[in-house]
Length: 633
Ligand SMILES: Cc1ncc(C[n+]2csc(CCOP(=O)(O)OP(=O)(O)O)c2C)c(N)n1
Ligand SMILES: [Mg+2]
Image (cartoon, rainbow, N blue to C red):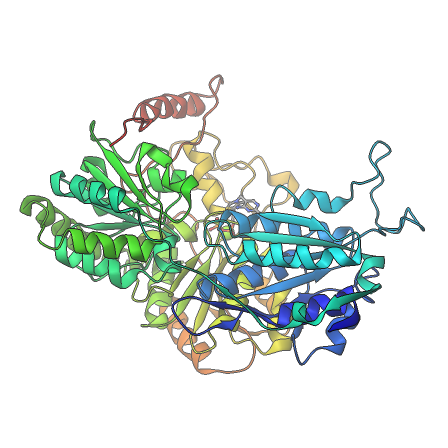
């Protein structure tokens, strides 16, 4: 049997019928479709969404980039087993998704992008918003999505929809390949009719098989652990996505191997576990960085070894250090010259549990780990209850949010100084409670990402920590949260500029240049070269971000002290309906220090400025600790 539908109608019905299954019950893959309409999609996909709203819910976005962030936030919270599609018009609506696509692909999160495209027939060309290239008639702006998509196709004839849609699903549901998938849909083709077999529209279950480790590689990995004096595990996002946190804890309890965590892997092991060292690397804890420096065997699980994790390859200093990489993605499993255990994280860890049942790490190493973990917990307590004044520190704000989040609340963040501070200070209690997007660290993700999280986990309290800079990039989705009654708590941390980059600028000798909000005529007022604060404070700009949030329909609570903040967070949790914005001003100079972690940010090699020259000398010294990790196990 076949049916005659438009490409738009067929696609919407296909998306509504896709299911995914891992370890049991199939579940719906597409929760719905975010969209902003223009001439490119109003009649094609738009008509289809209107006709089939009962099959595939439609939610209006305010910015296409933010729509992709909402989808990515949703996908991450659901361990990549479900997501949203995003439909846009042609031209600017489509290219607005490039940043969102890159974020999803870098973080390996499935999102389906449906940018409209110029006419396949080319009859009326050039159309409004079309980029014409005299030398190439096949290019459109949508080609900018190719390098940031794990799969890209352009449906130029209606019949191509079948293969394009199936390939899209294959990539979206493959844990090693997933990321942004783009199906560019020419506006004429979307509205064209096509004769399709009915089976294309029937429920289709995509099973995500857990890939087993090769027995040889597993035995070799276990052998390496048995011979290691100072083994360390590094838990990445893969531990959480594969729901391997139980297996990880079993392995830790059985063997005494301590665990450090990447940003995406934060929460793999509860922070109060005695062998939890917390954050590793540039934004790492003293506990994790000290043990990493001495480790002779590092077992990375579900990590892609970004520079923040490896301290730009300075974190592991033992001359004989070797790596074992448990990763479903062979590309990552091969990094750091490690022994590749290319498999699902849970099966890999369960395999190691079986192989190492009777093994315990040397007592002195385990003892070191326990002592460092306990000392770090005290350091966190000190920082989050510092009683800083007159303005509170960001660390105190994090402590308050952590307490408000309780056992099951989720913190969402992405850019600025908060991700590093959260990485160090957050006491993780649940694998899905820490949602810091630090693969792309994209300013503007915070509010949109939090909406995605809340849609994915309505039963949890969701706290978005957003700096003033990130807020200004993409506040508009607050309106979406108002319209859809998405109850998120946005903690708007105002330090009047780019505090994180200001500190970075001081560290490279550039005195916070260009990182304050100030009038043009006060640009020359820089931070003191030897200290932190500017010699002479600049006049603040007449900007009221709390009023801005209020004007977008959010309920806003202005707070000045940590006590007021704590009270406001409790109130915000208890309220229902749309978003609540809790505003607080913080001291931009009260940063959380680095704890023996380093990040490679190049400093000018030539300058007349003594501050830059000094920073360059320090940089060269620090860079001497960089290693290449070329030795194979
Ligand atoms: C889209 C985007 N542009 C630029 C950057 C570089 N960047 C990282 S943090 C930051 C400043 C963030 O300011 P804010 O949100 O106020 O946080 P704060 O640093 O003050 O904590 C900038 C410009 C980025 N990460 N993302
Ligand atoms: Mg700021």
